[in-house]
Amino acid sequence: MSSRPSGGERVGITDLARMKANGERIVMVTAYDFPSAGAADAAGVDVVLVGDSGAMTVLGYDSTVPVTVDEMLVLCRAARRGAHRPLLVADLPFGSYEASDGDAVATSQRFVKEAGADAVKLEGGGASAERARAIVRAGIPVMGHVGLTPQTAAAGGGFRARGRTAEEALTVLDAARSLEEAGCFSIVFEAIPAAAAAQIAQCIRVPVIGIGAGSDVDGQVLVFHDLLGIHNGAPARFVKRYDALRERMISGLAEFADDVRSSRYPAEEHTYRMPSEERERLARLLPGR
Ligand code: KIV
Image 1 (cartoon, rainbow, N blue to C red):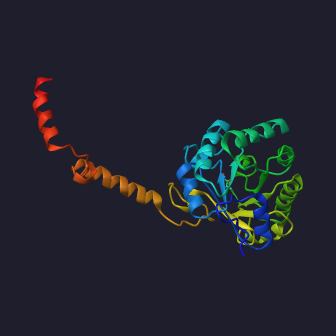
Image 2: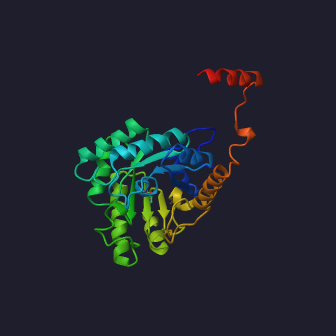
Image 3: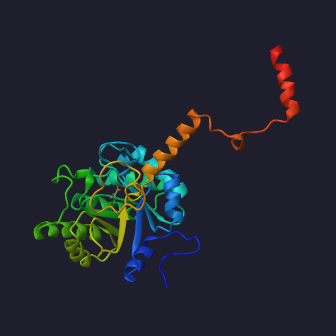
C-alpha cells in the first residue's frame, strides 16, 4: 500500500518519512507560479519547491543571489494557489537568514504567514545548521541543502560537483549530519557523485532528495524549466528533458504572428455576433455622429 496521502489530503513531512521507510521514491519539482504549481499538483508530485532558481528561470537574473524576499513571496503565494496536495517548500533567499537566528526565524515566518508555505529550505551546514535549529524551534519545518549550494557556489569553488574526493565527501556528510541534528525533516543533495551520495545517504535518517546525486537516495528533484525544456541554454549533466516546451511556445507564437499578419486570425468562430437589424441600425446612426 502506498504511503502517499490520497483523497485530496495534503502531503506532510511525516508522509515523506513514511515513504522513505517504505522505500517509496519521493517526487519533488520546483514551481514558481499558479499554472506550474497546478500542473505539478495534477501530475501527483509530492513536494513543490518554490526554489530560488526562480530568480533565473522566471525573473531573468544571472544567478540566485539577487532575488529578494519580497520577490520570492510573490512567487510562493502564486504557487500556493496552484498547489493544494503537495507539500510546499519555500527557499530562503541569499542574505535573508544567514546573519542571525532572528533573521532566519522572521524570514521563515513571512513565508508561512504571508505566502502559505508549509516549510522552508536553506543552504549549507555550519552556521546554516544553527539557523535551521532556530527555525525548527520556532515551529517551522526546515529542509536542508548540501553539496553544490548555488547561493555560495562562487565562494566555494564554483559550479562543480562536490564530494569527488573522500575528504570532500566527508565534508558533505558533516554538513548533512549537522542539518539532521538541527531537526531538518529532509535534505537536498545537489551535484554529488552517485557513489559518494549513496554512502553519505546511508548515514542520514531523514529523507534525502537528490539532484545530480544518482539514484541511491530517497527521492529526486528537478527544476521545472529544465525538465520541460522551457529555458534556453545547455542543461546541467543531471537534467533529463521530458519535453521541449520552449520550441513549442516559439512555434505557437510564430504561427499566431503569421495568422495575424496574413489576416487568418481572427476567423468567424473567434468573433462575437451582432443581430443584422442592429448592424443596419448602427450603419444608419453612424453618419450622424
Ligand atoms: O532553487 C532550486 O531550484 C533548488 C533545487 C536545485 C533543489 O534549490
